[in-house]
Amino acid sequence: MNFENILIAIENGIGQITISRPSKLNALNVATIQELHTAFENLESNTDVRVIIITGEGEKAFVAGADIAEFAGFSVEEGAQLAAQGQELLFDFVENLKKPVIAAINGYALGGGLELAMSCHFRIASDNAKMGLPEVSLGVIPGYGGTQRLPQLIGKGRAMEMIMTAGMISAEEAFRAGLVNHVVPQTELLDFTKGIASKIIRNSPYAIGRAIKCVNANFKEGINGFETEIRNFGKCFGTVDFKEGTTAFLEKRKADFKGK
Image (cartoon, rainbow, N blue to C red):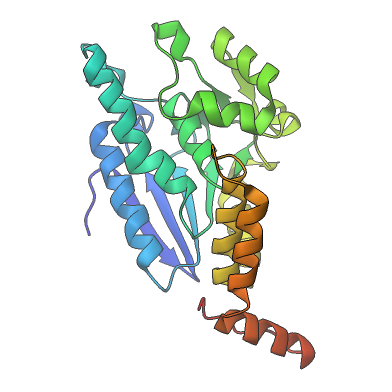
């Protein structure tokens, strides 16, 4: 499928999505959100893809925010609908994918850009990256899950400060706060991220999907994460991957997982 605002590449079990709106610093608009939804949906159903990496084109920006011109004149109802549709189509959708999604933050990740990165299962940043949620400086709040995911990742106090000051933090500050897992030179970002993806690919796709579900359960209202873990742990025992993994271990060979 041809996209206007994103690029897709698949190699060695890794699907890479590159947001390509360099003239807008890869800012998210409604059309790009829809394209990203379609791309993630296609990659999740593609049996050749085991891990997904998302990044931005160029060396300046991962995603420098939402396209403000697109919603500056919205009403109360239109604003709420924008947030609801965006969360459903992209941000919540990515968080709940069964395949691991890694954000390779190659520059500015601001507003909706940081919210997109936070919806991924973990994040790796280039040393020139800057992150922040500047929405209150525009008279609005983060609407794509930022007020929920940022406290989960870095704690309530730090999140409150970042949101209320509308300030940016450096990649190193993000690393110290636990917002990103690694900081690497810009030129090494994709190779480093693909290296981690390759380690993930060695393991059971079925088990990884269940692990994602269980970790997410801990942050969902009304769901007991421990019960979710027990239930999904049991389900693993009925899979081809469990049989292959335990057999390979006993036979002292490398497992050949099928994701079933």
